[in-house]
Length: 266
Image (tube, rainbow, N blue to C red; front, side, top):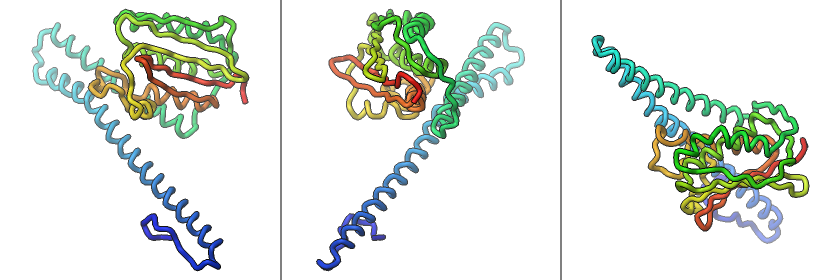
């Protein structure tokens, strides 16, 4: 049972029931070992990605502060410009650290929900308006396709975070001058919400990783030009905390995020 191989344990015919049980235990031990190894690998990757993404803004902050220290007679305009850049990078660093701690709390189930009845239509209209400057940069717009009386019981602040993260992702990856469609419907005891945006098809192997921490579908984007890589991971944890599900599909140049939420508190 303790040998590190997949060979089946073989006993005499009269010991067949024990053989089956031993092989079942061996498979369970092997599966647990694989899960432990995978968890350790993911932890190492998480540390590596976090260190990599933090290094970029931190290097910029240190670099600009060094320039300021080395040249005390720097012209005021140039000094102000460099202080502004260093401050922007520091804020960026703060956002990344805060989001990392936030998803750690969700993973450990230390986040409490304050649920109330939410008007989905009003929330989505409000979020679309708030993100309109970001969408307008590439000529994108949001189109809502849902009844105005559709409601769901959820934590409004955290559910808004889910929708905002998905909309920001769509704004980053949609083709220019395209529409981001949002639809919702009641199906039995659930509300199904879909976000659709035009984009190049995402390979299946990439789809399965979109909700992983620090994953970016477009690997050419750095942590400064793209998101932190935590937005969709945080969205998933919030949805799961509500007892719902979230998934993504990509076909015919359309990416669809689908969220399922229970109508009432279970």
